[in-house]
Length: 133
Image (cartoon, rainbow, N blue to C red; front, side, top):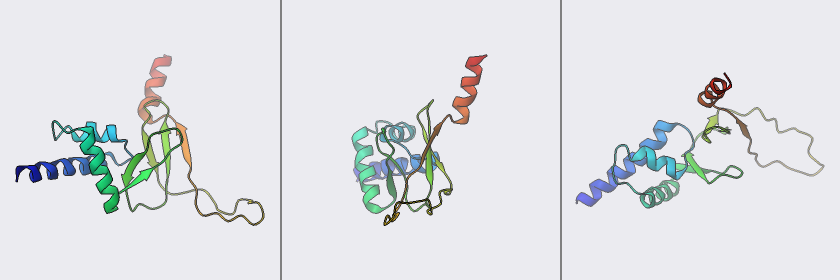
């Protein structure tokens, strides 16, 4: 049964990539992180495992305008995201400052919302300021 052990190692490495990152990841980012512990891991295996983890309810998709789908751990409280314009990474923002009593047109009912903030993460901000010197 060496195939089963290998498969479990791959799944564990993929799960660990999400847990360690603590932010939404694209499949390519999952691959890079998981390959540190499982050499030879391929992108098809990452996609197959992401699909299985979505079906299990362990992951949830994160859809952001103009970006490929990223994935994050499921079951989190409502939150928003921040995309760094330098490195492209997407980060989670805790909580929600949006109030649902904005002036909606008559008869409209809010069923949900998404907010994405854009800017520079601390690492990219400091490298930008270093480049300016």
